[in-house]
Structures are given as structure tokens and as C-alpha cells.
Image 1 (cartoon, rainbow, N blue to C red):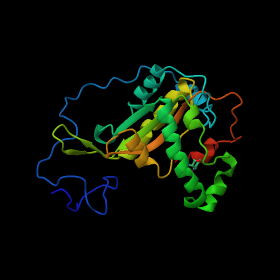
Image 2 (spheres, rainbow, N blue to C red):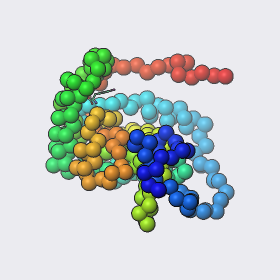
Image 3 (cartoon, rainbow, N blue to C red):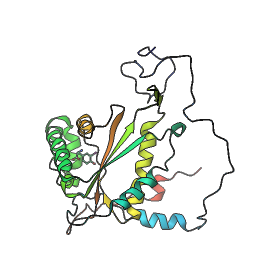
Length: 251
Ligand code: IYR
């Protein structure tokens, strides 16, 4: 029965006050169709320096907040990056992600209005004073010019469940971590394509942005990612990254 309390469940199965989204029927269906197993073909890129080359690419990535509104990469490049993101592993291969690419200036303006309205309240009321203090080095505030300057906004939604052809809901295991991994691969692909981005998670804006884009209720906004080229004179904080010895523990 829909609405019954589930005994056995995972953290991320979207329980609303103990009420499951899923029908409690006897009928079980595999998330993945029965498929034959085939021999694994390892990647052909056997360059032992591959990881060093990859690191050298990624160490140059910076989050930027000042985008050129003049220069616009081809949409096909964005598509290639999202294709790469879609190779991410996911719980039971449910691929629980949707990437919305916005290039309409009008929509970007509407998104900016929604975000700035909430961010004004976030900065002045919702965020702990320590949080606002911690952000000072980043020189951020509620004004988000990048939302209308960046040529593309990619809104990454996690699908909290899927909907099958017959209308029944399908469990999307680990949908948040799966979509986050896909987002990480997207950042790498954008960097490889010479593009810059800014990972943002606008507090309290998810439902309004989801409605604006006419996305279904099973989709929850995870990341709003402006993408493009840095504006001339774009500055970034002079940050350093942790050393390998600070992040690696060997046993
Ligand atoms: N979402 C707000 C505040 C903010 C929070 C964190 I944590 C940052 O690393 C940066 C900003 C904003 O986008 O301004």
C-alpha cells in the first residue's frame, strides 16, 4: 500500500515523515532488465602518465564568479561534457540525473531573480553569522551577475525516484551521490574543453527553479552550474590546495 511505513529502507529513499513514496506490493521487478553478461573490455588508454596529465589539467580548474557575456561556446561542446557526465556509475544503474541546459536570456533572468530574492534572505537571516564570516574571503553576496552573464546555466537535478511506463515508481538508490559523481565528471569534462564554471547550491531555490523549468516533482535541484569563459579581468581568491600528504593516509 502506498503511504505505509516501510520497515526496511535506505537513508536516501526519500521518506517524508516515515511515509514511503513506493507501493508496498508483492510484485518485485528488477530495476535493470535481465541482461546477458559480456566480456569486459578494459580502456585502451594505458598511458602510465595518464593520471599526471589529468592532474595537470584539473589543478588549473578554478571556480569563477565573473563570466564573459560576449564569448559563447558551442552547445555541442556542452553536450559532449554532459555525455561524459552520463557515464558516471549509479545505484543499480538507475542513472538518476537530469541536466537542464539554459541558454535563453529571458529564462536566465528569471532564474537570477528567484536566486537573488532568496539569497538576500539567506545572507541576512538564514545563514549563521559564522557562515557569512567564513564566506568573506570569497567576496560573495546576494547579487549574482553570473546568472545572466554566463552563456549557459546547467541545472543538475537528482531524480529521487523514477517513473516506469505503467506509472509505477522505481527506486533510485543513492541518487544524490550518483548525481554528485556525475557532476564531478562534468566539471572535469568542462575543464578539458577549456570552459569554466561555478558550483552553486542556491539555498531554498530548488522548488521555484524546478517549477520554472517545468520539471517533475521527483526531480530535486542539486547544483546550479553557470558555464562559460571567464570575463576579462576576472579575479579569483589566491587559494592553495592541501598537499597529498594531508589528504592521503596509507596503510
Ligand atoms: N549560496 C550562497 C552562499 C555561499 C555558500 C558557500 I558554502 C560558498 O562556498 C559560496 C557561497 C551564494 O552563492 O552566495
